[in-house]
Image 1 (tube, rainbow, N blue to C red):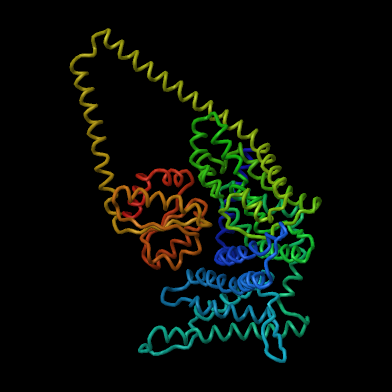
Image 2 (tube, rainbow, N blue to C red; image 1 turned 60 degrees about the vertical axis):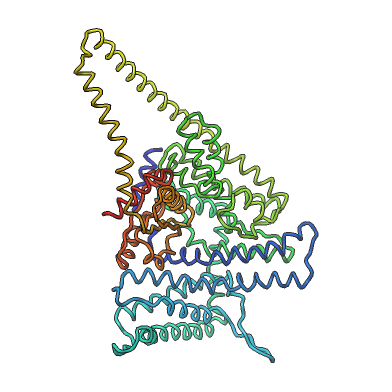
Length: 589
């Protein structure tokens, strides 16, 4: 087992390189930016649909108003995603461009939206008016949105890098000059999309977005099978096990399917058909990652209530609340689970077992798949029941998943608990032996009359030194952190959850000590526009692979950045004094 893990660990540089790929990152960050749209629209979807389970139906005017809000938000999801992906891709492109010659991401966003509309929508003309066909403007158009964003970013970089722009005299205000600077790349983008759309429709008779769906549909179908699900979620856990944030590698490849399948499930349910898709956002949030990647919800309760090891109990008590809300880094790094051979098997295979159980209930028992999306921080059991629309079978499935996860983790948990208890017992015996040896030496010295006044004085002096050092410690600490007044610290992780642990610890410790320190937490990818407002940026362990890119971003605005290791981050988030000292040290470098 250890040899297998060592072999996998050798691939960590490659995994980090994949995670940092600017195309995958742009998809992930662009998709994260539109998640509020998905969650907001699902609220109206829940209010409109769930009461139907108990035989209650809203009056037509209220029902139409609820669905209008859903359709006007979720129905244009791909348009928004084209813009957000283009923005994050432009940010990535700008890292390779001089500070005084950057891509205007707002212009890039506008070009991507127009390009996407050209590739995905038909004109609907009636006697009274005309408009857009919205079939591919929602979740079905996500793949086309990503393509439009990338093509736009590549074209913009080509022209901006070579300074092929309309140049204005120096006397012209910068905002006016920027407008003319964008004319050529913007015009080329729209022209390319327009000509391609004409040629594609002439050749195939339908829009490009429809063609993309037809090409990728077999892959979506294969991904929704038992083998496909096992590969997807086994890989996600495997990457995390070696310390690389698995979702950042896997999710970009399946992001479009996650949302499109959920939308298809809802449409099938409303049409009185079986909502049969398994690979959905809700399934990933609440079934596969119940308690976080690795399905660690049951494990943290084992640590907290079943462990005999004092260390494991302490870790469980510290991690139980975050893990209940799907922030399981305190458990992953403090236990540790990451790179711990004992937990390799359940950490990789529990998520696979969970999604297979969900698929069995959908395929063989007729349960509908996930139709509603809730925030990923909703506790797994609650998210499962609500996301599945309170179906009776959902309660049964949830109970089975919890039992299976318990059975998968329990033998390995017991083995690790026994190992830790043995270590603690060994340490205790060593400490006891040391104390006994010290006591025996003192008794022997006293018996031989060696404990004279000189040794007593020396002991007193040593105690005085210890006392002085203890008294000086708070003063030294106060001196070390006094330079934090007026400073601002931003903590970044992958989803904005783990970063809150350290940001809150810093804020609490600063408040208790009367230090004027401002802290904030967010997801990596949302940081570019925030950087000028902060003096130091701290990367959580799962985002540490982005340090090189973050350094380039920070150099542009003149602030500092640092990445934390796993156990170090957990210790800092639990110890206010150490977190303040850490920040002070980084700022003084």
